[in-house]
Amino acid sequence: MESQKVINEKFIKYLKIAVVVVIVVLFLWFLVIHPLITFHSYETEIENAAKRYYEINERELPTGTRVKTLSVQELFDQSYLKNDFYVPFSKKPCSIKDSWVKVRQEDGEYKYYTYLKCGVISSNVDHKGPEITLKGDEKVTIDLGSKYKEEGVQSVVDNTDGKMDIKDVEIDASAVNTNKAGTYQVVYTATDSLNNTNEVTRTVKVVARLKNTVNKATNKTGIYTGSNPNNYIYFSNILFRIIDVDGDDVRIVAAQDISSVNYSSIDNWLEYFYDNLTDNSKKYIVKNKYCNQKLDDGNVTNVKKCNSYTDEVKASILSFTDINSSIDENGNSYLYPGNIIWTNNSKNGDEAYTANIWFFTSFTKYKAFNKDYNFGVRPVLTIKGDTLIIDGDGTLEHPYSIGDVESAKAGDKTNTRYVGEYVSMNGRLYRIIGEDGKNTKVISIGSIYDTEGNAVVTYYDTDTNAKIYNPKEKGNIGYFINNNTSQYINDEYFVNKTIEVPIYKNQIKYGKEVDTKEYKVKFSAPNLYEMFSASDAYETIGQSYWYLNSSRTANVKAAMSNIGTMFYDPIYDSATYGVRIVGFLDEDCSIVRGDGTYSNPYVITK
Image (cartoon, rainbow, N blue to C red; front, side, top):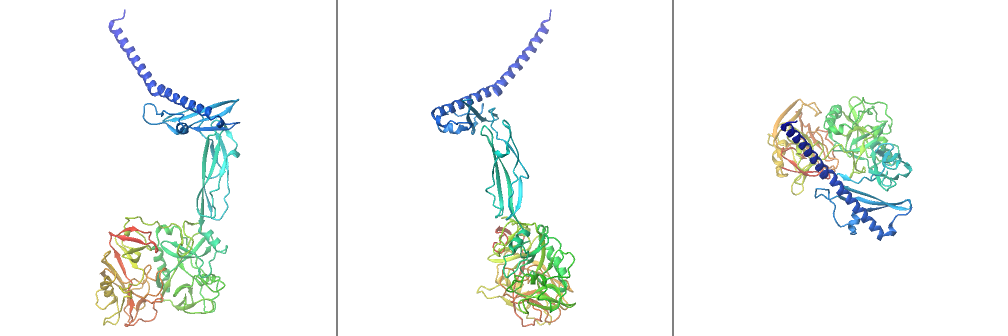
């Protein structure tokens, strides 16, 4: 016989097994069986409610092979259902909006299909629409003005009906407008035999590519002509004009003089200009060869074909080939400047041609000058023709925009922004021309005025023969600008900074200074060769102002005339010119609002 101990051990073992079995049964009951019983009771209650509905509304029963769908929400709304349904063992309601009863006639009788979604539990009934597979890409990009070609459907498969005919898929492309840039949806809808539907979409992006836009605007000639063809484009915070299509790319020219530079140093200055473009904007620029043929007075007015080009470079300037090609039948061209600018055409070793409004011969306005004179320079760039235009219509008020620069957000520090953006302080407009990692360097858009609207002017009133810019010398224009400017503008946002004054031996030429002097100032005159030191593209020419560039040679000084052209004749001691200021913003200055453009500048505070 077994001992009592063995019997006890067996009893305990079986008892444990029994306990486990009870726990498992209870577990299954509470977590599986009871919830399913409850759920199926919900299904039965819903189906019975639907049957009562159709007993009363018999005319609504479907005929033929049609399927009628009655939502559970509707059964509640019409009081065919009164008790709420909850996910078992919770207070979370079942999803009655996504639940329904469908009915159709089969073999002469009506059959009901009930679908209820209740938490993780849902009815075992076909409730999914067919799976649609498209031909081609789900995202399509097409050019503005082109035709949208529908690629159609590859296949349609339903989990109950199996493979379906692709002709049964409804395709709605009515929203696509190929004459307006934007993002549109093509909707594909398929329905199975139980009236379950499924939709998929194809995204169609209609874009305006720069090259295609130019070709369309110029009747496929690719060349803009006339006085105002609405060919403005905003690029790297600078207003440009589109010149033409060049192969697969597009050439643009600054709509303003960026600076005034001596012709003999233009190539070096253009490297400086390129360095000041934003890094993101540079991604759109491609190197190109630019016309630089030598001309004489006899063929400047009619040359339209070029026989000499530069090496591939990042930036250049206009040639007379560009200007002459832009002249319309009335002799008008948007490339005629309102002042004097250099062209990329030399006459001989000492002279190069300018385009201007002051000298007239036939259609073209030109004159050759000594290459060491400082005249306006308008850089030309070549950018990728497949660049997307995201905004604008090419007008001055709404120039084309390619999204190469993202505007600041409210609260951003001013010293995080880019060269070329506009800022407003106390109602006066400035433009960013640089930064030193801490402070933002800005230039006033124009000369300053007193409270009565009169231009503030100054002159050299010193005994020295050579007038060297010196903020520490009384009677010097540098002294006047640093010490008197705060009478006319609010200086609360500016800080004292050390500036470097270039001094030249004879003529003032880019990169040819023989000496420099450092001074700590709050305000100074512009440097002749810095960004945006010439008249602004949006401003009317008519303001004169001094530059800080000066020479040891008597009467050699730098000043902008009121016609927007640098003086190339001697400037005598009696000369009086206006004041345009350059200063550094406090590092704590931040942006309140605005997008950094001329029409909507950043408003700043500190």
